[in-house]
Amino acid sequence: MQPVKKGLTTSATLVLAAVLAIVLAGSIFITARALDYKDVIDTAWRVHDEVLLPTEAGRRYIDIFWKYSPELCVLGSTYPEVMEEGKILILQFDPLLRALVDGEGDQVVITQALVERLEAYLYLLGQVGSPDLRAAIQSERARTPLRELIGLTFEEARAKLVGSPQTIDPTPVGTNLP
Image 1 (tube, rainbow, N blue to C red):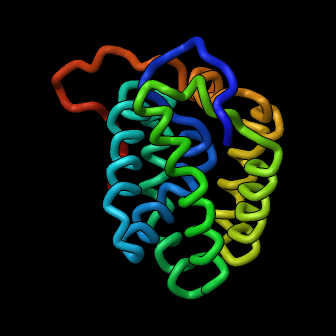
Image 2: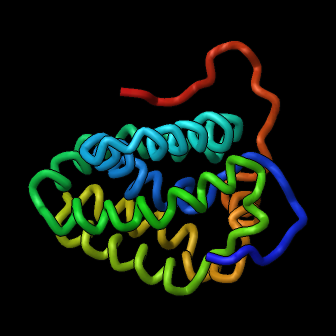
């Protein structure tokens, strides 16, 4: 991805928020541990803490992550193609998400190729996942059509998907952790 626009700056996220919460978030932690990619895990936690947690929409995606991550672990260990494609996506998204949380999300753009690869992965998960996971993927895809994100910077997509981070009250934030 080449830098394109400058403008907005915030620590933020993109597809990890919407669809990756279902798909890649689970795979990120699982696959990154398998690959021993400390930086990938650090980026994922920064997205969690700096982008998702400070917004109501982001906390919803955190809840989705915790609900489906056990199944994603099983799918990744059962189906080599799920693990392999997950690794490829993680490696593609990590530098883009890192740019986002480093305040440079206005310099990386969502491309058609990136969306097509993500859609193919979602299709694969829908084929091998439980009916509940399949329904969640369909619901999130209807809620946030990925093709509408093509051409947006990661910062613009973050703003569209989860909004701006809100000041966090030091009291515990409500999520539905298992």
